[in-house]
Length: 405
Image 1 (tube, helix red, strand yellow):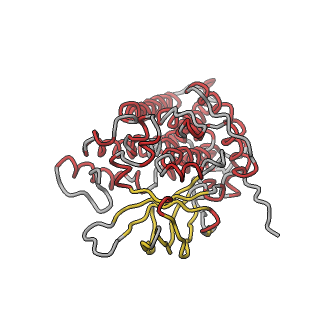
Image 2 (image 1 turned 180 degrees about the vertical axis):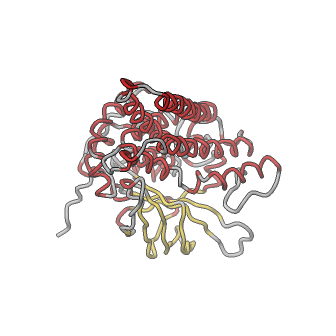
Image 3 (image 1 turned 90 degrees about the vertical axis):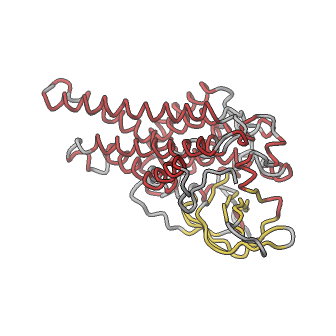
């Protein structure tokens, strides 16, 4: 007898009440912050989100911000996704990180062929995780592909009913760079390796997945070239312009937002620390006030830059975006995350021995800000070099291209 699947993605049968406006989405995110903060110890103990966190995100419908209206979403777009992620991450960076990825995947799923989208959203609470760093062989066969391999860092995978895997495909007779393609795989067809033991973002459950000769039909695949050109099947199905726009202004627009949220959470905790000492102001505390003001201004600036990019480019047809804009968006996502990491460290280095205790929010948010900025796509030395090479017209580093191909 099969065990009953008790994940919220299946136990919640009704369609989520997706927020209709930016203000409503932010209000719902802020209302969740106290309970998310309260559950942080359990989240870190589990090394994945508690089912209660997942149910809260689903029932509040905030992950539907990027979902097409045709399938019950609000299409509020990437600016709302960024700010909701920041609010959630300021209380629990692990929840903010997973929410960001689940929400962004609604945009990606909306690009697949229409029949695949009907299949996906037959469950109104569908969730998809991803792997973009993969190994193994993907073999074209009649009607699709077969994949035997592994994928790494699949955040929130335990709670999802689908996986998207970005893989290289080398066809017989092809020369040059392999085709990059997204595979969509049901949860039942891959294994999860419980290997997420980390110093930060402990609750994201970003585990390794294993695929063993998995067959993926053609309708469950999507060309990355079509995504970057804005010519996917979904761009023709949905009228909202974001589905034909640039992936880095939509799918990865909020990549730096969890680090920003952790930095804002750190600022809140640091402000409380300052307030507890204002009855005894001395020169040392005055210096700390100046440090706090500097930190707050830098985080606000990185936040403003992130929103500006989303507002300017999230609905512009991808075919109209030149390589230098693509380079800038990728650079700015890394800059926002690295600024957040540096600010958390800048303030933490002054917090003293009391901030070392595990019960301290300061040490937890410091760990999470650093972990959120450790993603390979947010690594400054790599991204910064790639951007500068694009400016100088030099060949990009391996895996780092700003063309639409």
